[in-house]
Structure formats: C-alpha cells, structure tokens
Image 1 (tube, one colour):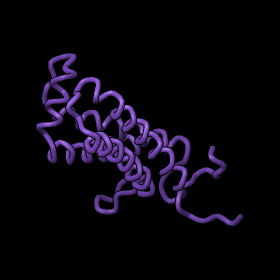
Image 2: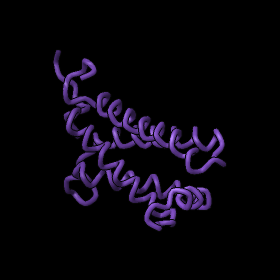
Image 3: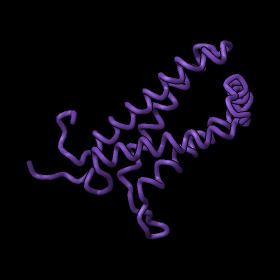
Image 4: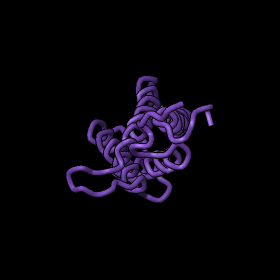
Length: 147
C-alpha cells in the first residue's frame, strides 16, 4: 500500500490523516444541511480538526508502551481515548455552537454537546484500527532496517 514497506510510521500517519480528512469533508458537506448558519471558518476548522486528529493518532501509534505504568498501550484503547480527548477540547471551546448543531440533527433527542466525545472515540477507534492493521505500531514503525 502506497509503495511503503510494512510497518511504517509514515504509512500510519497517511492512513489516519486520510480518514480524518474524509471525516472532516463529511462534516463540511453535512453540517450546512442541518445548520445553515455555519460559516466557512467553522467548516474549514472542522476539516482541519479531524485531519490533525488523524495525524496525532497516527503518530501516537509509535508509542505502544506506557512507561509510567509500565504496561502496553493497545490500539483499541489508545485511539478512542485520544479521539475522545480531542473532541473534549472541541466541546470545551465551543459548546453553544455544537449544541445548536446537535439540536438541528436531533434524531433521538440527544441534544448535549458531550455526545461529541463518543463520536471522537468511535472515529479514534476506526483510525487506530486501520493504521495498526495496515501499517503496524510501536517500535517496529520507527526502527530503520537495512535495505
């Protein structure tokens, strides 16, 4: 895939940034349908937010051992935690705007902006799963091998 040998940190970051860009583009397309007051700065911010979330999760995959508690940091834990944390920052920065968006969508009466943490965890899970599956993780991603 992409002409790179497995495992590869570059491939991890490429996969996760691509998924983040797709999620961001989906937001850019869907948000104006439900929230017409969204301006271009907000939509561009959503696109960049999820792309950078992907870059962070891809890079974080190089660290699969937690040195403080001296135990492995599995992809199924690492991705959702980072995704939820990044979306926590988003909720703390603009809870009113996210509440307005959720009220417009409101399929099942879940109008709290805190549901974006669950969304971030799901996206982080998908990103880290794909990156680990197709590009590996941990020390093997950053070690140089003789060619």
